[in-house]
Length: 96
Image 1 (tube, one colour):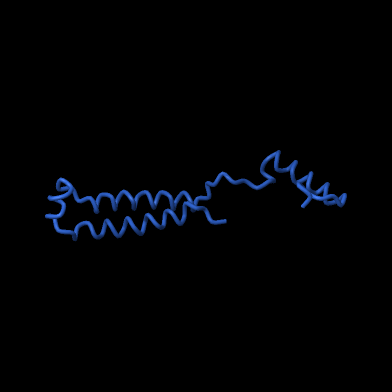
Image 2: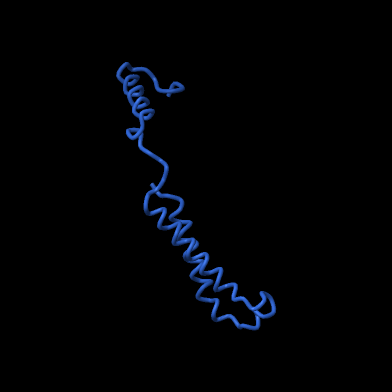
């Protein structure tokens, strides 16, 4: 199962890298006029790159809160109930 943090991380990595690489190549006059002399593309590119790496690593670690039914007492009871219904020929929840 694909964790949503992986594609989000990849998106931020790509966009952050583009901004961080483009930042030093933009004329310094543009920064003087619009952003108090701060290279906004470079710094926000680095922030986005760091966030993207963070999200990607979390997504690849598999720290999702989703657990299989065998890992919890409630899940085991649910599985036993479903197996019991199948053996008796009954229908599942809501008649399905």
